[in-house]
Image (cartoon, rainbow, N blue to C red; front, side, top):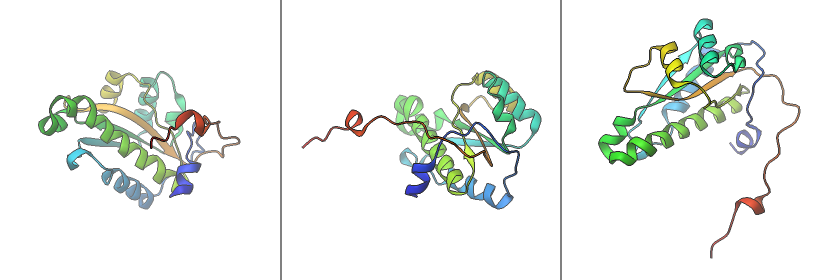
Amino acid sequence: MIEAVLQRHSCREFTGGEVPEEHLKTLMECLRWAPSAGNVQPWFFYVVRSQQVKEDLAGAAFGQDFIADAAVVFVVCAEPEASHEVYGDRGRTLYCLQDTAAAVENLLLAATALGYGSCWIGAFDEQLARRALNISSYLRPVAIVPLGPGKPIIRFPGRKAASELFEFVK
């Protein structure tokens, strides 16, 4: 697990290889088992293999064309009203987004553990993504995650020093 956390990186170059059905099912289970506030599970996931839809999603993501090169693209949607029913406005505006973020991180780590590249994309036009998949109005698309065999990374990007990020409180 620790290795997957430390090796995970944003992959923007895919080899064109496939993701076998067995691995796809594992990735879907990892999404399904993500934690959520009150176990509401306010999410829905589109699993896209259609080349045309992948190209439409790349267009919705302001020309991030590598999306269309991935073997599969997950579109993660929040269901704000499901969280609102239990937690009110905070559920609608925060918890459903935190919950989908946890699901995306599960997906990214599982992809890394299985040897795939992936990338969390939040920069996209929601209406164009909605149109590409005919997403219901009660769902909000919050992440696009292209995934598949990726080209090896040559150099990992740097990280801030721990001294800049942590403060111990006694």
